[in-house]
View 1: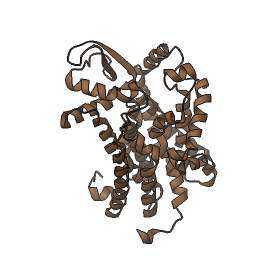
View 2 (view 1 turned 90 degrees about the vertical axis):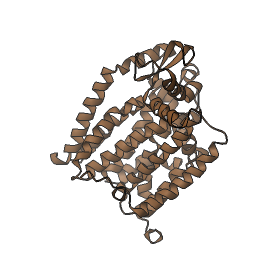
View 3 (view 1 turned 30 degrees about the horizontal axis):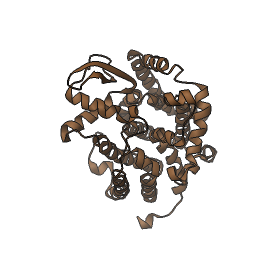
View 4 (view 1 turned 60 degrees about the vertical axis):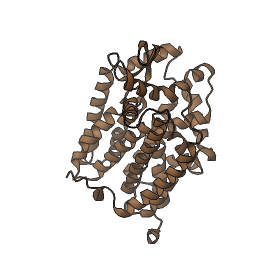
Length: 377
């Protein structure tokens, strides 16, 4: 049951296909180090590197240990006053601190780290493609190339932001959920799936949306009038994940963070007013060929695919991806946005990094499921 040999995780031919996609991805990312892109604003671009370095030198874990505290008055060695950045959590800086310890401190460490982590995201993504389009080498190959060459994906996967790290937890949770629901002999995967879905919000608060994953599945199964034994796993995962996730949410008093941010910006952190501006901006970004290539325009038509398939997990992925867009649209995007009600399409790309893949998977299925290209692989 617990057979984790490399050969069982990825067959040799699959590895070659992944290696080609990874090589293309690495080459494209290396060109971006000529002019490093750290992020969109000072706080988000450097907070994780700053806190990671502070952890290596002198960090105060006694106050709100799961949040990011930076030195406000004094130096890193002798800090007199710390300031807390409530919207950012400590997990990613802990990883950066470990990298600093291993290779020495550099402001480029976070960029290299995200570039390497993006290869893990690519690997798990191709495992999901293999789950939903089994036995189709062409799907794995071309999906890998699409993901590796999508312009914005390379840029934001070599930044100083936490979305790449966050997306690992999201794609692994989705992969495990689909796999545990497809395979009746792998019930043990539930014990990995539930914690991932429950606690991924400790990387980014927006990952609370993962709690909706088994709930979407339950709704689909109930609408299809499936038998009780078929809704067993989704019901267990939904109930246990919600219980663990929301309990942790209230124990850590995450709602207090929203209250503090609301006070700082003198406005609500979630609002329909934001969604009326942000949702059209997200859609407009998808129309940009320079950001997404041609695949972005195709994303806009994924809701139509719901009526073209009875595949349960494709429907889950389509609904899940659009739920991400809706939820992100309701949340404010910085003080500048709150004050001037202005946001560019480029600003939205950071958030697409966290859920872009779930738009892509259904398109890969409809593009490659009927292609007979196995003779080339």
